Amino acid sequence: MSEEMKPKTGTCAFCGQSIFVNPIGEVTQAELDSMATDKCMCPEAQSERRKKERKAKIEAYINKHFNERIGKFVREAIAMVEDFEVDKISINYDSKTLTIWLDSDSWLHLKIQHREDDELKV
Ligand SMILES: [Zn+2]
Image 1 (cartoon, protein in one colour):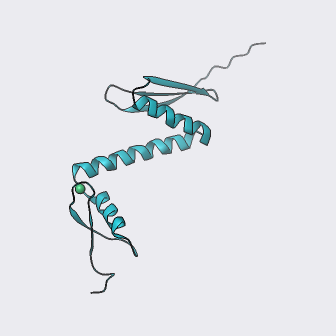
Image 2 (cartoon, helix red, strand yellow):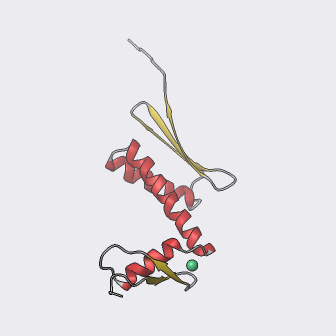
């Protein structure tokens, strides 16, 4: 059996379980361990995956709606809400309002409302 054909195993960073992984090309043991952690079904590994997915969803939302400068501010605002430094933050921009808050079940909300006012003052 050639070196490439050998099944490779990595170790879950959380439970230490050895898991078979299928790396493409040459990979380091650290990469095998990372792949194993990504595949492991232990509660800690699953919880870590959920955290990563949540973070990715937040990043996608920020990148979809805001430029780099406002995005940076929004990330900071989210951190303040998640750390309970403030209950709710509203940011007005471009005829819209972004509101950030945590509900009673600890879900983070980011809501963009379009202000439809069409006011003329002459
Ligand atoms: Zn594990």
